[in-house]
Amino acid sequence: MNGELKGIIIAFAPFLGFLVNAILLLIETRKSISSKEHTHAKGHHGAGHSEGEFGITKKISAFVSPLAPFASFVATLLILPEKSQINIFNWIPLENVNVSFSVLIDELSKTALLYVTGVSTLIHIYSIGYMKHDEGFVRYFMFLNLFVFFMIQIVVADNLVQLFLGWEGVGLCSYFLIGFWYSGYENARAGFKAFITNRIGDFGFIVGIVLFLVYTGGVDYNKVSLLRPEQFFAVAFFLFMGAAGKSAQGPLWLWLPDAMRGPTPVSALIHAATMVTAGVYMVVRLEDLFFRAKELVFYTGIITAILMGIFGLFERDIKRILAFSTLSQLGLMFAGAATEKTYTGMFHVFEHSFFKAALFLISGILMHEFDNETDIYKLKERKPAERGMILSAGGFLICTLAMSGVFPLSGFWSKEAIISAVAETFGNTGTYLMLIASFITPVYMFRAFFVTFGGQRWKFSLSPSHDGGSLMFFPVLILVILSVIGGIFNVGAWLGEKYGYSEQIHHAVSPVLVHIIVFAGVAISYLVWGRGKEISERAKILWNRFYLNEAEEGIFIVSGRFLKYVSFNIFEKVVIEGFYSVVSFLTRVGGVLVSALHGGTPARVALMLILGLLIALLII
Image (cartoon, rainbow, N blue to C red; front, side, top):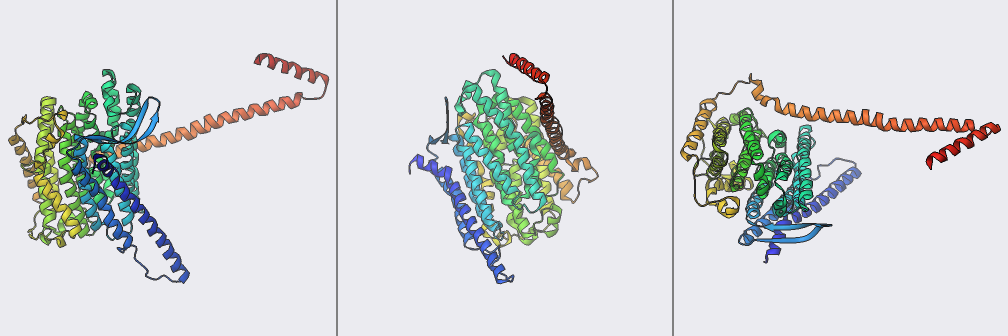
């Protein structure tokens, strides 16, 4: 198999899965309409076929859908030793600018493809069990395959326009999947909220692309070297707006917690392991550009990491806790990507995809077993650990330790690399902020663990029947194992010296000190929540997260209503309708004058001739 064929398989296998599912959905829809018409013609409402029944269309979808990302994963493994750029076709040929549709295979894209396609395959398999009885099964997998296709375009693009295609594509699929159960108002609203918030970031992204094109005369990544020093910050700022929107950083964070309204596998794939890391990927891909604006990237990331970690302490919904955790970890990724060793940001993206996907899927197992319950206090009443859900309980503990950066789990290696890189690039200020973030992580994560699984006698029974069934059990088990052994993947070496990797390990901050801080956070979490206590809900400003969500929503809504008022009541009513009213009035006046002067006495005729002559002279 040559490199070009492998590249095409990587890029287009998920799209083929989308097409198959689209055809299956069309068949399913036609059958449903035909069945309803037949039932109506019979004049009775028989039982018929249940829409949740696992029929032939669902079986084909269940086979094809995981196979599509798996084909891309296998092709990625086969292409690992190679490095190439495959031009599929010339997409937008313009004068002096040629935008191609390409598959760029280099160190960075291969690293990203491994976790995008690998984790996607596992979540697709998990989804078969999770969505088995849902009537929208085929529609769900159609959008999931399409999402993976667009995510791959972000990874393999060699120019900003193709990157933007994938960027908007994953945003569209995210909208469809967040509001997948759109009959519920809150679900549909969450989808709109995500879509609208991302449009704010994407506005900046478009401006950044246009500036890049104007300044360099092209949109290929290698054109960065043509930017003049005074042009770097403006381009970086607007492109970073797009990254902040997609990765929910800074003031554009508010859509991600509400995105948990979608199916849990969607939360695991799109809003933890892949799409929300697209911003980090772009920053690392354009490292020569963003390093000139490293303070913007770093401080946006680290402040978001700390603030969202605090917010995670004041949430009872397990999926929303994990959403705030994702926001916090994304901030750390941006912090690493802003350093001279940009590989550290991608290193944490890679390791984070294992333990965060596992945590979300474990929450899905809990929901599956306990009637979609997500409140950690109500889950505790169900005593999951005593029911033999050892994968859920043990896996949650392992992944929480990994996220906290405990040796030798996967998160230790990537977080240690970020702390050292930040200390070298941003000095003491960066170091202290990273240590604060390292302290907060175990506090909010172990709060979720102690509340959900604490105070129970664990029944050790590693059986799929206790944890959602085989299709849900084994993908989670694999992700938990990868969270343990993730350190064996030497991501830094894969990315190489180009992204700041060095074989010489330099610990700017002692790992012992970091572990002391981490376990201090665990101890505090145990002393409070492990003993059945909780922060008083009378501290409403904390439980409402400083009312930032309400304030930002209010600003967006008020701004929208103000623009609506200005455009309708002032621009349309006054300017446009006023213009036409004036024209109409002048026309009527002119008509009256003409009719008054037309015909009759010779004096009127003479006056008309004089007026016509004067008008002609003025025109000439």
